[in-house]
Length: 259
Length: 251
Picture 1 (cartoon, rainbow over the protein chains, first blue to last red):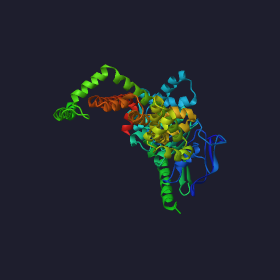
Picture 2: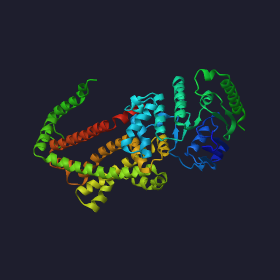
Picture 3: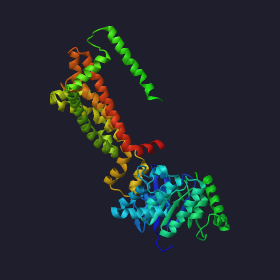
Picture 4: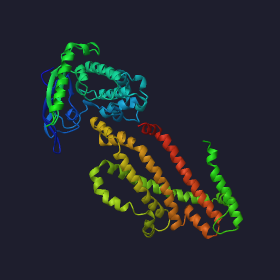
């Protein structure tokens, strides 16, 4: 991690009416770091991601991106939504969906095709360039959404439970593909999940939030070697120790989190 | 199912009408289908039916174009801007329930007989369904797609052209089909009520001339025109939105 963080939550408050969703939330994400955020439902993890993505403006404090406060979405921060089928344009092909991001970026028409092909190749969808999202499986649709996000050439990826709706096998392949993309692009990743093992497997650091209001409950450094492996990493004693700690935290916060 | 079987009932009804009308003898109000058919062929041959059809369609389509243009512009605007929509709601909800037929006397005084009268009333009748359905279609665009537009920092124009319009278009086209049906009904109504031109006027004059065969020929012809209009629009809808419709159905 370099000295200055890429994303910094600085005592972020977020209230919907009287309801405080986030309370004095502070933490930092370094450049190129993968930070996974977990917590019981209602702890505000998705809300925290939406604030960092600029989709919601906090009622107090700020989220700084490379030192400047985020007030609205930026193109170098790409958002991968969980509901891929709703986040893709059903009337555009795979190539057309990637093209949307390039059109937004102002990429000249002549150079789009080449970029689209490269991005679809990267997520293994090159052969499906002319297929519509409705003709693709869930895993393929999520790969397509990731390709569209990569078209933004993002410095940071905001991933909101991106693999939560996928079956276990597909989820594991996408986890490994995501780690490969993170390695190759050096993108900073803010990853929200409810799957504790996924958080440990992917993250350099895992942040556990507690609800009412959402605040930091635990921060764990994941010192597992990379590249990680679905079998050996998950079997290693260090992995299991972290898993144990995280489970204890989640159970405690589910019991004691509510006033 | 065999499509021939579905035609059995109308064929039987026509045959029954033929027998009943012939048994009844000469009448001022009904005519046997065979005479209706020959009256229609006669009106087709002398060009009067074609001329009347053209008059009616010019008014119907012209009025539809004006009403749809206004309805679309208003619908997209009000669908995207909630505060403006709330501001306009009482005005729209007070104007919308006025039956288009009730506007005829006002339009007649203001515009006199002719195309302008009919265009104005058809446009008035068409603007409301298009406005209401377009507004709903724009509001019904998947909120996640609007977020994607925000995340990509699309300009309002890009958002409308690349996201909102294609997402709402299939439903807007349904509104257009509905309004096209209304336009024909209202055009013929205006012609029957006051305007001395088109198919509606043809029905009236044939009736007043005690020519039930010709009067019914006009009525049947109006039915054929309406059927063709809808069939054409359904075909266009399939061509234009085949993929989107499939996607809608799959959801």
